[in-house]
Image (cartoon, rainbow, N blue to C red; front, side, top):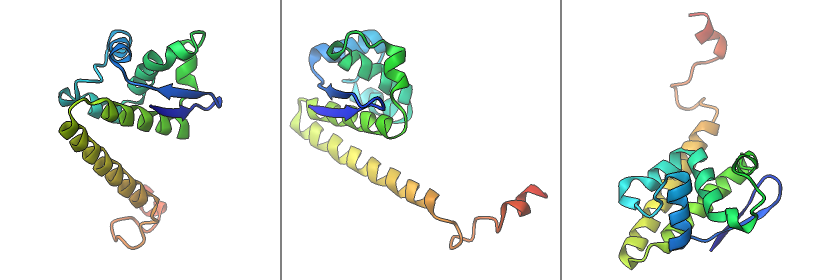
Length: 141
């Protein structure tokens, strides 16, 4: 089981079971167990789908929290942590040990690539030679 804390400081347990996967499919329209059908890729690129799936999975923990309220509490670091918890839990649930190990490697590689892209975005660009010298030089043309 994985956990995450939303922006309202509520801790949520993410536990993928057959029942919670069915709720995710029925309520969010995402078959989280169809890993070869693109569900992991969708969750990597669609944070709203992540929120809808997590609400379907975690909602029974706090039945009074509506979908919109749940989604409103997912942003920034909490959304990132929620996505990672969901994907890690899907990988952990995968029944086939060899497929689970392969998925874990893919997720680890994807996260390393994302960190590298983030690091590249945070660099000032002065050493790359591709970045313009200043914003003024691109605005005038």
